Image 1 (cartoon, rainbow, N blue to C red):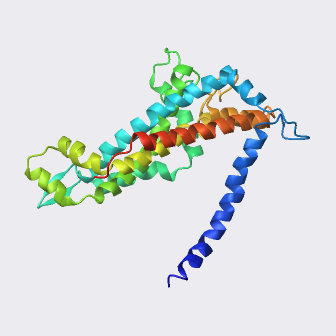
Image 2: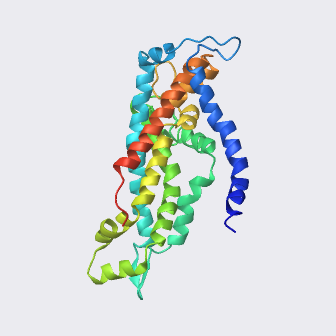
Image 3: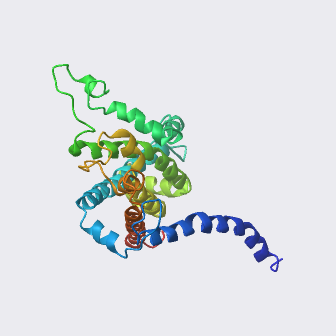
Length: 299
């Protein structure tokens, strides 16, 4: 039986690994190669060494885009995980205990469906809907609430507010998934632990911070990494929702938007590849640091 184990495993892994190597690993390697060229997407490829990275270092729009990504990276995981933990706790433990069984708030099963509903909608549809909600004229849902004598609020046309609107939509779209994820984690925590704490007089806040949070730490850590990766993207929402679309003044530009525009609008594939390499290493560094900094002994 042992002799047949490894051929069995290799047989199942061979095709997925081959596909991954062909369409992911090979694409990364090609991107690294193109980042050293001035290729426009057509014609001959000219090797320019590190010129693209020097240009990137001196590009003001790059640093502005990086700050925007940093803003999302700082707030998206914190806000999403905090909301998801609170909602998941209420849906699983917030109702207290009855007959020795820990329960969620009334209607918790219905609320789970409602929270998860945004995950069923395509991101493009979400962007179109909220584009109308935050529209910077009187046709916008929020601006329509103000009197006609008031000037329209420039939600998506003002750099001070556009990224905040993007953040709100990202949180709204993501929080339901993490409510379900954390609810599954809480479901694996033995009820006897909550019952013993309740008998000792622990309040709901104590249950959350002393029992739920430590036992969910590995799940929270994973969610933090995924949300950080999402914060490095945000391309679809910005491309569809905002007026600026990361344009010349870069009011809502992020690195993913710069890669798109340099590839398909400016025909600077080499420079876009250099941006892609930087984004790759930023994402990899963030994931490694997050896993390292948040590492703790298993409870």
